[in-house]
Image (cartoon, rainbow, N blue to C red; front, side, top):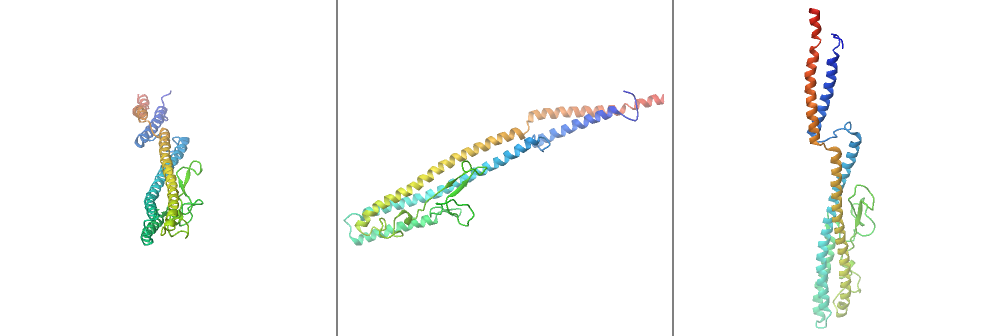
Length: 297
């Protein structure tokens, strides 16, 4: 290479290398400071796209688990009220058994009837007042066709959505709760007059009510059993959702997170190269001064 003064190619070459090393050093500094290997699409365009899709699914899975937990809370509220209704039905059957025997006269049976009807009224009151977040649970609103969420009052079976998509086989299922009022269960004077369970004011009516009350208890137990099975299913669903979210987070981490040990090695390497380039640039800038010695000589 000739000794010239118009162009210092050695300095230009060193400066280019210095810019490259400094750019790599800046990238390593950014990665170490953020803890992320992919900070922009320029770092890894395909990796960024995959990561963002995974992040969206992770957020959906986590919210889906919260949705399922809310559904469990709803079921527990319904089951708690059904437990109280169960106590009332047991008491009503006890009263019917008491009125069915011949050792009481009509006046005494009317006294028993008074408590019997009070228990039936309380069952209806509980069924009408039990709600979760404004959604009535035991009045029959959550039975029948699916509720699409467009109305002011929820009616029809209740959709519990927990998946990231909208596939019925994978992303949601329904909670159905039948009508648990006294009339729906077929007990008390709120139902059809003359049917078994309507009254226990006579010995014959009390005897007929025993069968009606057994059927009412079975109907109520079927609802509770369905809710219990659904709660177990939701708990398993939550476990699966949390597992999926955890595995996706691990996959997202492998794409996005920086390996600190490896990146720190690269940082030190680029730091040394940058320092060496700065030193060599100073030397390269001083070389044209050698031409001045020739001119001065």
